[in-house]
Image 1 (cartoon, rainbow, N blue to C red):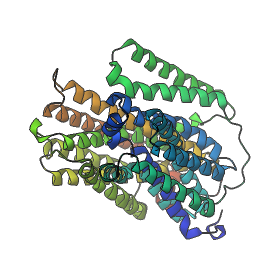
Image 2 (cartoon, rainbow, N blue to C red):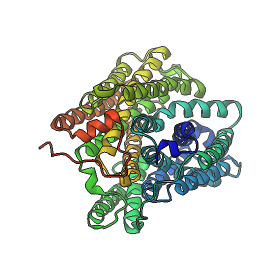
Image 3 (cartoon, rainbow, N blue to C red):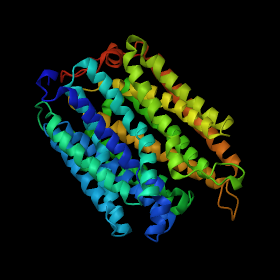
Image 4 (cartoon, rainbow, N blue to C red):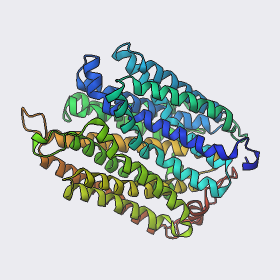
Amino acid sequence: MPASALRHPRALVPVLVSLGMLVAVVSSLGAPLIPTIAAEDHVAVSTAQWALTVTMLVGAIATPVMGRLGDGPHRKNVILGGLVFVLAGSVLAALPLGFACLLMGRALQGVGMGLVPLAIATARDALPPARARSAVATLSLTTAAGVGLGYPITGMFAEYLGMYAGFWFAAVTAALALTATLIVVPRAPHRPSVPMDVPGALLLAGGLAALLMTLAEGERWGWDSVPLLALAAAAVLLLAGWVAHSLRSTHPLIRVRLVKDRGVLVANLTTMVGGVGTYLLIALVTRYVQTPESAGYGFSASIVVTGLLLVPFSVASLVTGRLVGLLGRAATPGRMLPLGCLLSLGSLVCFLLARSSLWGIGSMMALAGLGVGVTFAVTPGLIVAGVPAAETGSAMSFNQVVKYIGYSTGSALSAVILQAATAPGATLPSNDGYRTAGLVGCAAFLVTGILAVVFTRAGRRLRPSVVAAVNTGPAVSGEPAPSAPSAS
């Protein structure tokens, strides 16, 4: 759809970005509230943790389904439906009706995590190439950058207005986003409806649910426990069955063959492994700064201060992502992906060597934001260049799911490492536990950087369409991106 045909062309990008920010804020709502939820609803902290886990589970399942539905002619209706679920879930979670009601509300909010890929597909279809590229890069950053906004907002509400205020804020924000979407967001270009791949959706949903539950419950059940190992085996079998089914299906939920495209593959690999390192760092920092100084380290920081330390991460990632979008020909994947990984690696090195002051930690989070900004600004161009326009929602949904898996793995890794560094009978890990976790994070970003260098150099004949998409914007014509010879 030409930009001139839009009813409100200047408002489209802000509305789409607001969808991404809403998702980010909703997904981070539970984290600072876990101890408060446990106390208010008289449940164990491990049980209260499900206020986070259930949102991630539902989001991972809903995202690919919404992406496939959004690739047809009903994309706007799918977006509106997702916002209705977020609004209903926010109101339900905001009502003081007990933990079960809160959990149900958080599950409904999780449906909204599928909105970002649909926003990216809308930008690709509705905007001219120059604006589409910038918008897609910004939208890709919102889920990570929004954490730096969600944490302080949640912390301030919890500290000054009570546990449920943050959910009322989410409800009001969802209602405003719903209204703006109804007015501003255009309908998708006319494309034939594709039958929903119900068996594929069930296999993928089951596999992702088993995988994320394995990561979420590993610390509580024991990583060598029989139930957890059985759950992990089920995840592997279900996901393998989904891949086999998708390769045979005429209309799969996600076209797995497209993932083999060099640009799409490097984008998904760097997103997942980089997500491990990013959320490992965020989990370490939020726990470290709240540790009482009596432990010999930490700052006894409040929830609000902890959240404010993440603001530099959000600001730096958004600003850097915007700058990458303006760099033109210099912003080739072969240069930018390794640079993003190097900056992120530098932030973990700073955590290892210079975490003795809050100013130092704030600066370190800004450096981490620079790395995320560079990386996540480049990866969408790699994906949209490697898939037909009609598959954008599905392909970006898969990338989003891969991102969630990386985030969950990073969070679980931080908990496992710090638990291993906690002496029997103690409640706090030793300072050496943070050093070990920091080294693991360094390894994650080192692996990510190596993958980026190997794949982009092997594709130095990396198709002209990829470079064009990253430098001048994704194709918006509705035709498949032009192919190029294999780098091999």
